[in-house]
Image (tube, rainbow, N blue to C red; front, side, top):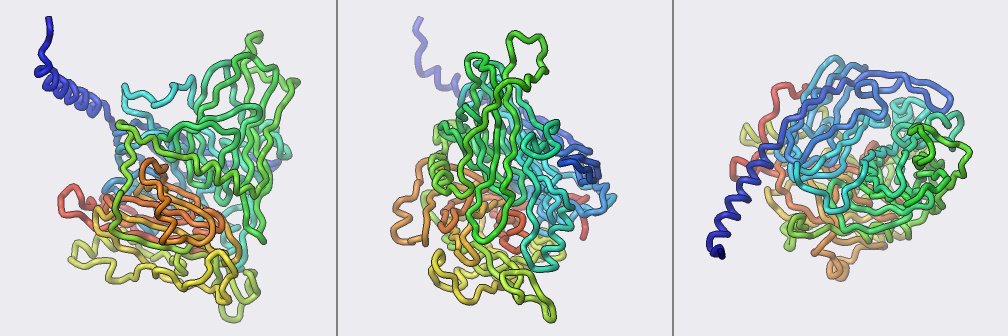
Length: 581
């Protein structure tokens, strides 16, 4: 019996509606308790007391599904003020839960608690959380795993197992003392002593063979590695000896898969990769290595290499946990530390899926265009003091459009909300960044005057404005790659290049079809990057370099997105337990 097609459409709509209700009903509220406390950790032959969450280093993994509501009660039991940032979470209308100190909240003081309350909306993949005050994220960080909604598969082969790999830095010294000394002297801070994988330095460092992350795999199985760069100040290459890896997601957004031997991951970025084990037992072990990428000269960086070990389950062994140290151990060939060509080749391959299920909603027209210079600079030494900056009369600084942001004593979002309620506006008290502090050859010879201005500046955007932002690296005190992170939004990387941005010719080559969508992007060393985003999230949103030393020096700013006209386009009121300054 034939069924008339005129009955199919209503049935299809009904079924789709029922499925949507079922999926929505599957969203749950997940509760976490994060206790910020001190713990003794031994690395590189020495023990020290570090700030942790729940005594874990790295901290606990937060797991949620797309659509879930997440409540994290954070209790501060250490002598330092504390905030946590849920890096990459959109925080739609929930800016009070974003976390950067003195931007969206005052810090959680010793003995106090605060509940971060947010919903994971339209995101799935890997993100991470970390302290967002001073340099405490050196040890206070952990993974966020966002699973697809129940019944929704990955757009790639389902892995046999999923494993978070967090890259970090280990410091023998107290990082709070390191940054304090740098600010006091005006010089560059000391560098880290080792890199880590899941908190472990691995066998290439002294006293660390027992502190090695090992991943055991079965022949022929596919594994998803959830890579997170939690390092304070280092971009990292990653490679697995004698294996290739397939990139399937960055910053919790699926990408068109492609296979590489080596990838680059900047601080703040996440990358999901598929690693398929060899189809047979190889009778060998393999290093999983991470090493730094750095082009700045002069300057120092942690030039060491961290390694974990990929080992295969031996079908002839009864023990799952046995490790055969007598097997050959292969190392990957890592790039040179300044291999910008590899970095460019990798980033140019990143493309959004751009499918009906996962579209790339790239703004095709632009309401607001901005050009920001980003880079280093100087500030005069205090009167009657000698500094250790580029000269003994200057101290290091960093800036966006020559403005080095000074954080206020009360959180910007609190000031904005209270003034908006009174009919005023925070923007009346602050000036936006200048279009450019002066016109010069940004990637050529530096100007004679390298001093930057200081101040607290916000840039105001009307709700739902489409924004195009070009960020131009400068050669002042040397070219350098800057991983810029935008809170509260994802953006599309529509173009990038080297040298000075050409506003006439470069836009003609922008990718407006399937550009990669991210929350953190590297401004190329001696080059520029162009991004577009929709300002659909009211509130105050931090944007800063994710090299902690540069943020400390002032390479940071904030956007103020105004409320829209509809009730669901307005910032929600602050929670009753919002910390006070």
